Length: 281
Image (cartoon, rainbow, N blue to C red; front, top):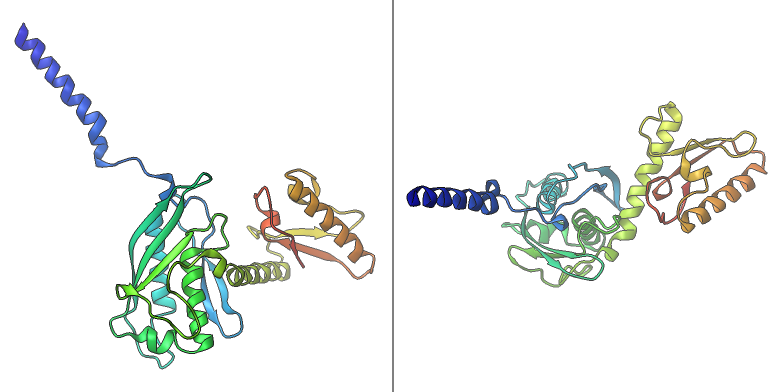
């Protein structure tokens, strides 16, 4: 009888240990290490504005931050760093070394350390040289990895190493220390707004509005909208203020007798409770 009791006790203990500690070998995921439902973008270089041709870079919402950064790095290697302007093929790629999390009262801050591997040092000769070229490379790196248009950004800080070492002082840019979202936010947002604007114009021309992300007004008597954010008067005080401003602008434009249609896009037509402004055409 005693042996039976001991056997049952040992079996129960083993079962509990497996249930509590094994869990299929997986620990619970830290939510701060998952990207969530965000709109990521990649970019192309532009001689005038540094960045252009913003392109959506969709990833599953449960993608780990490290995996997202790795994917963005591969895109940079393929579409920007793969060849020099002399058509020399490079072997520049990126290693995600670590992601540090800093606790704050509002949310954890995420600082990534990324190593730019360039054994032939092509980046120093072709991508970081010159005022325009150096700045374009800076914005390509910062906007792609940090995604500063997001709130909060994908990264709160980027430490970029070059072949495992801190980058040396460069003539026209500074990649020494921590690169913050503020350093690239305006350039990145301009490229993204430019992309959204041209998407809306193209859909206006073709008449295909499926999944447009644009808010359409056909101006008859009064102002009508199929979107709750424009005519419903609901939401935060900031949204209501923007709705009032939008109506005033449309009424003023209508008074000229020349206005037929209005396109609105950007954060105003998103689900953001506090949109930044109204983008319209």
